[in-house]
Image (cartoon, rainbow, N blue to C red; front, side):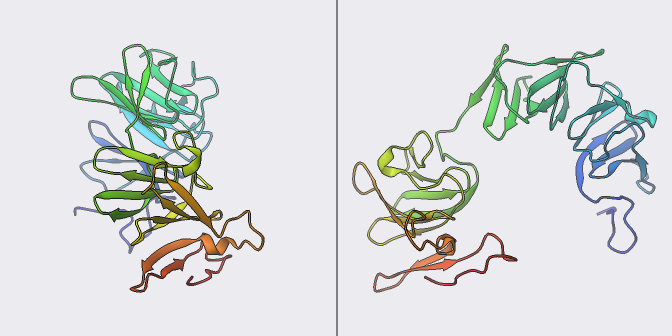
Length: 303
């Protein structure tokens, strides 16, 4: 380790220590923070100079070096020319851009936003890149020059005329919260798409969203914590604020049972905040409960 900023002893050289991006020029290092852009000579790294002249807001989300210029993006604007000491708006063609992120590569300078992907024309304006588009995507290229974009929806590939979404067969969600093995089958709980099962060959998703049949529908698609593989071959999962589900997929079609159902009288959300679980030698199931907000909601304990 050559250096660290802040070093834990001296005052931080930055007004915000949230580092959102790094850009390297031939001799300097630029960083984007929640409170402005800073630059230092890479070979020295001693004095960090703040560069905010021209910025409407100093919360800088992304920064790159492209075409001999330093570019940066805030929550709603794109700027160029940071190496001159003053940022200049570079908005032509973007039209209501929101939440942009910048990517620089041999194929060009790209801006991914909630309204699509744009490419800088190299002179004065941004051009939309494709009809179907990934929102809030980072664009990158492979060694052969193929373009890809990553977004919350998944992985996109540029076909030469449009963006194509490549979806993995499973699990249905990307935010994995829990895993349990039942024989050779792997079950996962997710915070964005219910429960999924991989049997060694294919995936099966249990979710109220499209792709799950009604007899296997959970009460909620999100916030599924905790998993318990029961001795009888069923799977238990905590659907926070909705219920605890029990999936019996030993039958075809599978059957789902609900406990602590939010639709029942006397429902207490705390009973659904499943975190840990175990099966006792006598077959009893034990569930340890958590909370989504420790400062306002006290965990109920053990069921």
